[in-house]
Length: 358
Image (tube, rainbow, N blue to C red; front, side):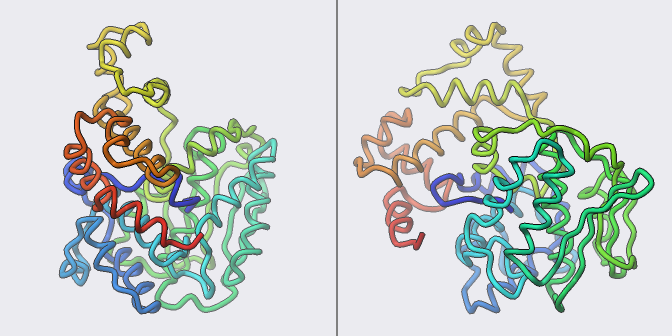
């Protein structure tokens, strides 16, 4: 996962929105793995579960599932509280920002193959429990994991997450889903084996393999990277979906609307003003945003949340002034909205961020 810092990572959406907008297909076994990381560190996971709207009693139910957004929220909270972007997979923690650093180091490559090779090499500098390799033979590229130490109870979650992580990043580098021929795992099919097909489309999933690996057409290794530093910064603001969900091509209208909203210092943009700037009717604006899986209100909330977080962390402005800067009529409505976004009041958020070590 590529979460870079508290300043740049928006906190999860309100849990009620999460639960209603996405189907619950993520197995509780993944939640249990994160709970094990908390247990090993001797830290309570109740706060993280609350932010993800996961009832503590339900964690014991192996047949239960959560939504992808709940998984994002839980992972986000756990990485912050454990200060470990690997969530306990490895013998040593990966400090906050580690995977963002790896992504930036790989960005200097002109082609995907070189970027992935750099990722594999640099990953070994952070974690020596596994070794990543990239090879190609007879037109087939194989990205494999060699286990150098016993991963124990974290084995499934570790291998799956590392492969989802690098597959999501590779797809982001070229801005299109990298189609897999095969995803292989060196263990028997778990009870939730069906979710693997959703996480590693469109190829076959093989269990009981000699090693964990992804295989895809080697011609993709020659594809140019389409990203630059500003794109990386934007991606790092919401990196967790790259691991939790299959990659989808960037939504062009969503990006343009977000840019216009972010540039509006007084938060005065409406559907009418945006539609006129984009040379669309209001009806077309709402329809096209829906086709890209977004809504104008949700985008406004995202921009407001990011602006509020930045002002709380980078300035000493009073809460009332920050509320006005984020387009709220009064500080009470701002406090209510911020608590829905983050689970904390603005004052609590600012205080907790100041005591967090860098």
